[in-house]
Image (tube, chains in turn blue, orange):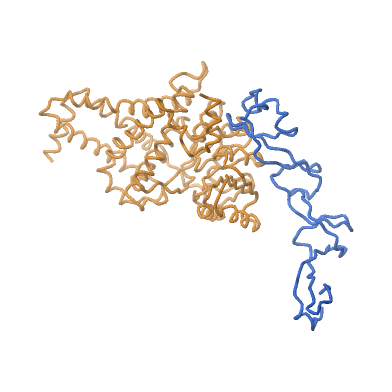
Length: 136
Length: 421
């Protein structure tokens, strides 16, 4: 791209992500599965039963835990011996579970999740002559 | 020379009861057994542990609290492994300094495969259990965040577990990284040589390993998951190993898997560490698991030997320490100074007898200046550390002192106390 002679008088004010496939600019952040890239994720609370150090998934929430799968105690749900220690995410496409989804950029135009490394960024500059933002 | 012989004769001849008690209290039977084991053992190490091993079988888990520098040392040693792990999981357990920022950068760079950040501290065992939730390989290995691994450590542990299908866990060999830092770290290095390199290998010969150290241990993932992961509270490594044994899995020691760890440099720090270890051992082995009792009618020989190893060679000699005073007092007054001097010469002689072959056969780096410490080693190991252990037992038995241990977060400790008064 030829250098814009007026560029020196402009300053970058933001970066717009651009889809590497369709050049669309309507991209939004989306969590995805680190194994298959799928975006249909279900967060599941991870419970910690303090007396036995058992850590297990509680898909229906901590209140619905019937027993601790490690020590088999039943009176855990309504006690203060059970605490949440984070969330795991289940990918409904490949059944993987992982502590945090990989953040990707979803292009609404081509309906695809792109890795950050693949997405281009265009610099939106502000003109010093108060002409409003222009594409560089 | 004649004087030394006379003093030894005074010790051995003054009072048979006093002599026998001294020999028992100062761990001489256990040390001689380890020496016998050393003589009988065919030391391995010639074979390359990494050859022919299946790759991508091990997940490495490192819990870390406010120690990014230590973690960087660990990660550097992990990069140098002959058989690298398939995945590295780091758990930041409620870190409050810049650890999380360092970990996030390492994760973004790909030095860490999976990063778990606990907003509140959960303790080492629970952090390990959270990480265990995400392990998908056949083996999982846990190390401390400041542990530096020798290049073949991971391969040696994996090989041992692969060759022993019934084995659920295997612990590695540990040496002191900073053994030149102070007198106390040098003495600890001597202690580790005897207690870990030879003591644990001797126990392993009889399938009687007591503890898979938290600093370096590998587990078969499905077995660790089957017993629900680590035990609660402090001493989680010992508690988990005892549960492993009781669940019927074999526990092993791999002497060729080396890790180097920093030891306390000052005496107060060393005493604090030992008080915690000894309280945990007493609470778990005596109060919780009642190791003097047979576990079941079909108890395996290895489990019986493991129980008696602790009761006979650690617990009882420690309890007998205060009784040495009246026993020594029963020696006639005129013979007492010669008895005490002869006794110490006897202990130093036994230390030389035990440690000299150990130096020759030791597979780690052998710092020969440690030989200069042999004259004070019996006082350190037999008197000072034993007194610390006795105090730990009494404070745990009378005051449940481990409840005040800051190793476990106060919030968790309070709930553990409620559930197990």
